[in-house]
Length: 293
Image (cartoon, rainbow, N blue to C red; front, side, top):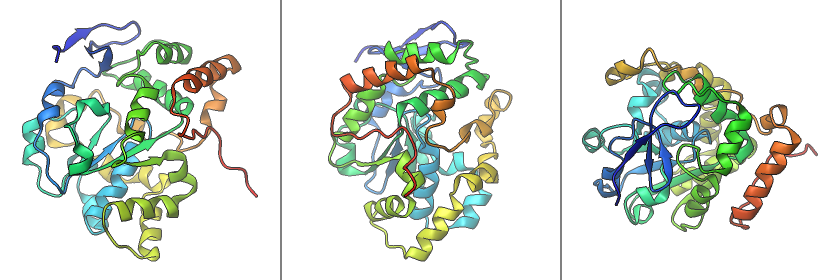
């Protein structure tokens, strides 16, 4: 596998990592070691393209895996309970006690072979227009990147594979095509919560009553997540990020269709055409809320 290359992309304040025609954040120093990391059968991986709802899904999964221990979840930083595989050194990942719940945005080919056969892998997909709006806000205000371009530039980058973590369609298609991956949609997690959370619980091999699931849904609602103090707790070894990071950026609107307020018709048609050409036709992408009956 080729070596990592650091490059500058117009609009970004920081050097990015470039590997096999995919861009990665500058902190992914252990990227090529992840392929051979030691897996455990009780590992759970939450994966999604950036700004697709991974953080939300992680909190649900962590609580299910830890017997709905709400008190512990509030007292311990979310970012220490669920380690970000892409950022953390592999040696730290190896030392994490079981059961490990790990987050990643990596394309499937960068993860260990047969990971979904050996561990639990949950992939969350969000429609690309809402992803791009949220991504734009994230990279623009994240002081470590300070993207200076416009949303139109981000849409253009989307068409030229200049978005972090690679081509959205390729990313989604590969996980969707793996039969051992639980593939869920952000839109369903918002509007079909009971059904979707039940799928997660069953996939993890747990048993929860409807009352327990209802409480879990309430605890992890978007409003509660925005005020959950565990997301404001800075991990002890993140001191170098204190002046660079605003944790509020993890939770913006929590809506379906926010892109309508930001996209021009031309931008919308442009993304539609790209997705139409490249997405697996079995994947249903929903851009707007369900119509009320």
